[in-house]
Structures are given as C-alpha cells and as structure tokens.
Length: 95
Image 1: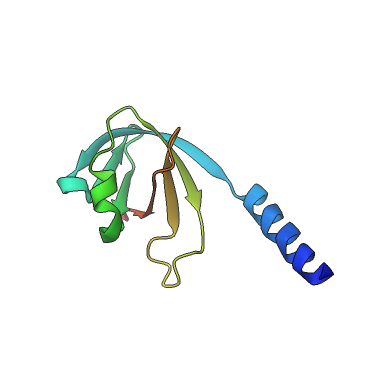
Image 2: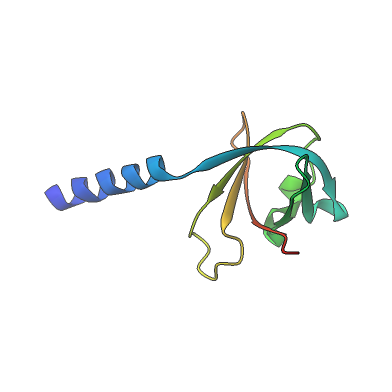
C-alpha cells in the first residue's frame, strides 16, 4: 500500500512543478479554431474543444500549461479559462 501513496505523492509533485503562464485573450478567430493573444501569439484549438473556446471573451485571462497528456504531442497545452472549470487542449501556432 505504500507504493500507492508514493505514486500519489509523485503525481502531486509533478502538478506543482508545472509552469503556468497567464496570458490575455485578444480575440477568438476562425469560429473558435484560433485564440489570438494580446502579446501577438496564437493558439490552435483542438477540434473537440472549439465549442468551448468559441464562447470565450476578449480580455479573459487564460492559464497556459504545457503537458504531455496528448499522446501524439500535437495539442500539448492545457488552456484554462481563469476563474472557471473550462479547460481545452491547444498548441502554439507555428510561424
């Protein structure tokens, strides 16, 4: 049973080690497929999350967390609308 507690402690430590970047949403583009940020960067939204992202409003604060939850590594970011439980998957738009 100690192994189970060790795993829980390890997962908790990994969550604490994640770097969270706060950004401000400028606008939602292309019917929710793209989130344009105030700093000029753009996030491509996971197709399954477009219906959530399309409802987000400009000047909202978003928390960007890099994760490895996406097995294919395509949508490797977790985006959380601050103050809510709304979370989507996304990736940075490449130049």
